[in-house]
Image (cartoon, rainbow, N blue to C red; front, side, top):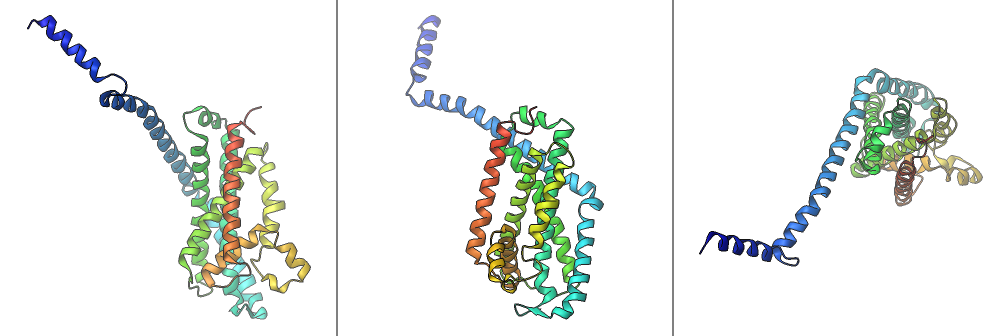
Length: 295
Protein backbone atom coordinates (compact mmCIF):
# COMPACT_ATOMS: atom_id res chain seq x y z
CA UNK A 1 0.00 0.00 0.00
CA UNK A 2 1.38 3.35 -0.99
CA UNK A 3 1.92 6.28 1.34
CA UNK A 4 -0.79 8.28 -0.44
CA UNK A 5 -3.33 5.52 0.09
CA UNK A 6 -2.50 5.21 3.81
CA UNK A 7 -2.86 8.94 4.25
CA UNK A 8 -6.25 8.97 2.58
CA UNK A 9 -7.46 6.06 4.71
CA UNK A 10 -6.22 7.69 7.94
CA UNK A 11 -7.99 10.93 7.03
CA UNK A 12 -11.20 9.08 6.26
CA UNK A 13 -10.95 7.25 9.57
CA UNK A 14 -10.52 10.49 11.51
CA UNK A 15 -13.49 12.04 9.76
CA UNK A 16 -15.58 8.97 10.53
CA UNK A 17 -14.67 9.13 14.23
CA UNK A 18 -15.45 12.87 14.43
CA UNK A 19 -18.84 12.72 12.74
CA UNK A 20 -21.57 14.43 14.83
CA UNK A 21 -23.26 11.89 17.05
CA UNK A 22 -20.27 9.60 17.42
CA UNK A 23 -18.64 9.18 20.84
CA UNK A 24 -15.41 10.93 19.86
CA UNK A 25 -17.20 13.93 18.37
CA UNK A 26 -19.41 14.24 21.42
CA UNK A 27 -16.44 14.15 23.76
CA UNK A 28 -14.69 16.78 21.69
CA UNK A 29 -17.74 19.07 21.65
CA UNK A 30 -18.22 18.72 25.41
CA UNK A 31 -14.55 19.45 26.04
CA UNK A 32 -14.65 22.58 23.91
CA UNK A 33 -17.87 23.77 25.58
CA UNK A 34 -16.67 22.98 29.11
CA UNK A 35 -13.39 24.88 28.77
CA UNK A 36 -14.90 28.40 28.86
CA UNK A 37 -17.19 27.41 31.74
CA UNK A 38 -14.30 26.04 33.79
CA UNK A 39 -12.21 29.09 32.95
CA UNK A 40 -14.97 31.48 34.01
CA UNK A 41 -15.53 29.52 37.22
CA UNK A 42 -11.84 29.62 38.10
CA UNK A 43 -11.72 33.36 37.41
CA UNK A 44 -14.66 33.95 39.76
CA UNK A 45 -13.12 31.77 42.47
CA UNK A 46 -9.88 33.73 42.25
CA UNK A 47 -11.84 36.99 42.30
CA UNK A 48 -13.86 35.87 45.33
CA UNK A 49 -10.73 34.92 47.24
CA UNK A 50 -9.15 38.25 46.33
CA UNK A 51 -12.11 40.31 47.55
CA UNK A 52 -12.35 38.24 50.73
CA UNK A 53 -8.62 38.57 51.42
CA UNK A 54 -8.74 42.31 50.83
CA UNK A 55 -11.71 42.75 53.18
CA UNK A 56 -10.17 40.62 55.91
CA UNK A 57 -6.81 42.43 55.66
CA UNK A 58 -8.65 45.75 55.77
CA UNK A 59 -10.19 44.78 59.12
CA UNK A 60 -7.09 43.21 60.66
CA UNK A 61 -4.68 45.90 59.45
CA UNK A 62 -6.52 48.64 61.38
CA UNK A 63 -7.82 46.41 64.19
CA UNK A 64 -7.39 49.23 66.70
CA UNK A 65 -10.12 51.11 64.84
CA UNK A 66 -12.33 48.22 63.68
CA UNK A 67 -12.37 45.68 66.53
CA UNK A 68 -11.20 47.31 69.78
CA UNK A 69 -13.62 50.32 70.01
CA UNK A 70 -16.80 48.14 69.90
CA UNK A 71 -15.37 45.97 72.67
CA UNK A 72 -14.71 49.04 74.81
CA UNK A 73 -18.24 50.33 74.18
CA UNK A 74 -19.78 46.98 75.13
CA UNK A 75 -17.65 46.90 78.28
CA UNK A 76 -19.21 50.20 79.33
CA UNK A 77 -22.67 48.75 78.65
CA UNK A 78 -21.92 45.79 80.89
CA UNK A 79 -20.58 48.02 83.66
CA UNK A 80 -23.42 50.54 83.58
CA UNK A 81 -26.48 48.51 82.59
CA UNK A 82 -25.33 45.17 83.89
CA UNK A 83 -23.41 45.71 87.11
CA UNK A 84 -24.85 49.02 88.34
CA UNK A 85 -28.43 49.18 87.07
CA UNK A 86 -28.81 45.41 86.88
CA UNK A 87 -28.47 45.03 90.65
CA UNK A 88 -31.57 47.17 91.14
CA UNK A 89 -33.56 45.45 88.43
CA UNK A 90 -32.86 41.95 89.73
CA UNK A 91 -34.05 39.17 87.43
CA UNK A 92 -35.73 39.09 84.02
CA UNK A 93 -37.37 35.93 82.70
CA UNK A 94 -35.85 34.07 85.65
CA UNK A 95 -32.29 35.14 84.84
CA UNK A 96 -29.95 37.73 86.36
CA UNK A 97 -30.37 40.93 84.39
CA UNK A 98 -26.72 41.10 83.31
CA UNK A 99 -26.98 37.54 81.97
CA UNK A 100 -30.24 38.37 80.19
CA UNK A 101 -28.80 41.36 78.30
CA UNK A 102 -25.49 39.67 77.39
CA UNK A 103 -26.78 37.96 74.18
CA UNK A 104 -28.49 41.19 73.14
CA UNK A 105 -25.30 43.20 73.53
CA UNK A 106 -23.32 40.61 71.57
CA UNK A 107 -25.90 40.68 68.78
CA UNK A 108 -25.95 44.49 68.78
CA UNK A 109 -22.17 44.51 68.25
CA UNK A 110 -22.45 41.99 65.41
CA UNK A 111 -25.22 43.97 63.69
CA UNK A 112 -23.56 47.36 63.82
CA UNK A 113 -20.10 46.16 62.80
CA UNK A 114 -21.13 43.91 59.92
CA UNK A 115 -23.21 46.79 58.56
CA UNK A 116 -20.56 49.48 59.00
CA UNK A 117 -17.77 47.35 57.51
CA UNK A 118 -19.49 46.84 54.16
CA UNK A 119 -21.00 50.30 53.83
CA UNK A 120 -17.63 51.99 54.42
CA UNK A 121 -15.61 49.57 52.27
CA UNK A 122 -17.95 49.57 49.27
CA UNK A 123 -18.44 53.34 49.38
CA UNK A 124 -14.66 53.80 49.45
CA UNK A 125 -14.47 51.62 46.33
CA UNK A 126 -16.96 53.94 44.63
CA UNK A 127 -15.19 57.07 45.83
CA UNK A 128 -11.73 55.91 44.76
CA UNK A 129 -13.07 54.73 41.37
CA UNK A 130 -11.75 51.17 41.49
CA UNK A 131 -15.24 49.65 41.73
CA UNK A 132 -15.57 50.09 37.95
CA UNK A 133 -12.63 47.72 37.50
CA UNK A 134 -14.55 45.03 39.35
CA UNK A 135 -17.72 45.62 37.35
CA UNK A 136 -16.01 45.44 33.95
CA UNK A 137 -13.97 42.36 34.90
CA UNK A 138 -15.16 38.79 34.14
CA UNK A 139 -16.38 38.52 37.74
CA UNK A 140 -20.10 37.89 38.13
CA UNK A 141 -22.24 40.23 40.18
CA UNK A 142 -22.88 37.41 42.65
CA UNK A 143 -19.14 37.04 43.25
CA UNK A 144 -18.80 40.73 44.13
CA UNK A 145 -21.81 40.67 46.45
CA UNK A 146 -20.70 37.49 48.21
CA UNK A 147 -17.13 38.78 48.61
CA UNK A 148 -18.22 41.96 50.38
CA UNK A 149 -20.79 40.02 52.41
CA UNK A 150 -18.14 37.64 53.72
CA UNK A 151 -15.98 40.61 54.68
CA UNK A 152 -18.84 42.02 56.73
CA UNK A 153 -19.50 38.64 58.33
CA UNK A 154 -15.84 38.35 59.30
CA UNK A 155 -15.77 41.68 61.10
CA UNK A 156 -19.15 41.09 62.76
CA UNK A 157 -18.08 37.68 64.09
CA UNK A 158 -14.65 38.94 65.17
CA UNK A 159 -16.22 41.71 67.23
CA UNK A 160 -18.89 39.30 68.49
CA UNK A 161 -16.23 36.90 69.79
CA UNK A 162 -14.39 39.73 71.55
CA UNK A 163 -17.60 41.03 73.14
CA UNK A 164 -18.40 37.48 74.29
CA UNK A 165 -15.04 37.36 76.04
CA UNK A 166 -15.87 40.67 77.71
CA UNK A 167 -19.29 39.33 78.75
CA UNK A 168 -17.66 36.32 80.42
CA UNK A 169 -15.79 38.74 82.69
CA UNK A 170 -19.12 39.94 84.10
CA UNK A 171 -21.41 36.91 84.00
CA UNK A 172 -21.48 33.18 83.38
CA UNK A 173 -22.89 32.12 79.98
CA UNK A 174 -23.61 28.53 79.01
CA UNK A 175 -24.79 28.05 75.44
CA UNK A 176 -27.99 26.00 75.48
CA UNK A 177 -28.31 25.41 71.72
CA UNK A 178 -24.90 25.77 69.98
CA UNK A 179 -26.17 25.08 66.44
CA UNK A 180 -28.94 27.67 66.71
CA UNK A 181 -26.54 30.18 68.26
CA UNK A 182 -23.94 29.81 65.49
CA UNK A 183 -26.41 29.75 62.61
CA UNK A 184 -28.33 32.80 63.86
CA UNK A 185 -25.25 34.95 64.40
CA UNK A 186 -23.84 34.09 60.94
CA UNK A 187 -27.17 34.68 59.19
CA UNK A 188 -27.73 37.99 60.98
CA UNK A 189 -24.21 39.16 60.14
CA UNK A 190 -24.90 38.25 56.50
CA UNK A 191 -28.21 40.15 56.51
CA UNK A 192 -26.68 43.36 57.81
CA UNK A 193 -23.64 43.03 55.55
CA UNK A 194 -26.05 43.03 52.61
CA UNK A 195 -27.98 45.92 54.19
CA UNK A 196 -24.72 47.86 54.42
CA UNK A 197 -24.01 47.12 50.76
CA UNK A 198 -27.47 48.41 49.84
CA UNK A 199 -26.82 51.61 51.79
CA UNK A 200 -23.45 52.05 50.07
CA UNK A 201 -24.96 51.60 46.61
CA UNK A 202 -27.34 54.51 47.15
CA UNK A 203 -24.88 56.70 49.10
CA UNK A 204 -23.41 59.68 47.26
CA UNK A 205 -21.50 61.34 50.13
CA UNK A 206 -19.98 60.30 53.44
CA UNK A 207 -23.00 61.82 55.17
CA UNK A 208 -25.24 59.35 53.35
CA UNK A 209 -23.49 56.33 54.86
CA UNK A 210 -24.19 57.59 58.40
CA UNK A 211 -27.90 58.39 57.95
CA UNK A 212 -29.16 54.79 58.13
CA UNK A 213 -27.01 53.75 61.14
CA UNK A 214 -27.94 56.91 63.04
CA UNK A 215 -31.64 57.27 62.29
CA UNK A 216 -32.70 53.70 61.51
CA UNK A 217 -30.29 51.07 62.79
CA UNK A 218 -29.58 52.49 66.25
CA UNK A 219 -33.23 53.11 67.24
CA UNK A 220 -34.31 49.68 65.97
CA UNK A 221 -31.47 48.03 67.88
CA UNK A 222 -32.25 49.74 71.19
CA UNK A 223 -35.95 48.91 70.77
CA UNK A 224 -35.20 45.37 69.63
CA UNK A 225 -35.33 43.67 73.00
CA UNK A 226 -31.64 44.05 73.82
CA UNK A 227 -32.32 45.46 77.30
CA UNK A 228 -35.83 44.24 78.05
CA UNK A 229 -38.47 41.62 77.42
CA UNK A 230 -41.44 42.77 75.35
CA UNK A 231 -43.69 41.18 77.98
CA UNK A 232 -43.04 44.34 80.03
CA UNK A 233 -44.67 46.49 77.33
CA UNK A 234 -48.34 47.41 77.04
CA UNK A 235 -50.27 45.40 74.42
CA UNK A 236 -50.22 48.32 71.96
CA UNK A 237 -46.46 48.70 72.20
CA UNK A 238 -45.98 44.94 72.02
CA UNK A 239 -47.78 44.95 68.68
CA UNK A 240 -45.58 47.82 67.50
CA UNK A 241 -42.43 46.02 68.66
CA UNK A 242 -43.36 42.98 66.57
CA UNK A 243 -42.77 45.07 63.44
CA UNK A 244 -39.09 45.44 64.38
CA UNK A 245 -37.01 42.75 62.60
CA UNK A 246 -34.12 43.15 65.05
CA UNK A 247 -36.42 41.94 67.84
CA UNK A 248 -36.65 38.55 66.11
CA UNK A 249 -32.88 38.34 65.62
CA UNK A 250 -32.01 39.25 69.21
CA UNK A 251 -34.55 36.81 70.62
CA UNK A 252 -33.41 34.00 68.32
CA UNK A 253 -29.82 34.50 69.48
CA UNK A 254 -30.93 34.75 73.11
CA UNK A 255 -32.81 31.49 72.72
CA UNK A 256 -29.69 29.81 71.36
CA UNK A 257 -27.56 31.08 74.26
CA UNK A 258 -29.95 31.10 77.23
CA UNK A 259 -32.92 29.06 76.05
CA UNK A 260 -35.46 31.88 76.53
CA UNK A 261 -37.21 33.95 73.86
CA UNK A 262 -40.23 36.21 73.38
CA UNK A 263 -40.54 35.08 69.74
CA UNK A 264 -41.10 31.56 68.31
CA UNK A 265 -37.75 30.41 66.94
CA UNK A 266 -39.30 29.19 63.67
CA UNK A 267 -40.79 32.61 62.97
CA UNK A 268 -37.42 34.25 63.67
CA UNK A 269 -35.61 31.95 61.24
CA UNK A 270 -38.24 32.55 58.55
CA UNK A 271 -37.86 36.32 58.86
CA UNK A 272 -34.05 36.23 58.85
CA UNK A 273 -33.88 33.98 55.78
CA UNK A 274 -36.50 36.06 53.95
CA UNK A 275 -34.50 39.25 54.57
CA UNK A 276 -31.31 37.52 53.47
CA UNK A 277 -32.78 36.39 50.14
CA UNK A 278 -34.53 39.71 49.49
CA UNK A 279 -31.43 41.83 50.20
CA UNK A 280 -29.16 39.56 48.15
CA UNK A 281 -31.49 39.68 45.15
CA UNK A 282 -31.92 43.46 45.46
CA UNK A 283 -28.17 44.09 45.58
CA UNK A 284 -27.63 41.79 42.60
CA UNK A 285 -30.26 43.62 40.57
CA UNK A 286 -28.98 47.09 41.47
CA UNK A 287 -25.35 46.27 40.68
CA UNK A 288 -26.26 44.60 37.39
CA UNK A 289 -28.07 47.78 36.37
CA UNK A 290 -25.22 50.02 37.52
CA UNK A 291 -27.36 51.78 40.12
CA UNK A 292 -25.29 54.18 42.19
CA UNK A 293 -22.22 53.69 39.98
CA UNK A 294 -23.15 55.18 36.65
CA UNK A 295 -23.60 58.93 36.48
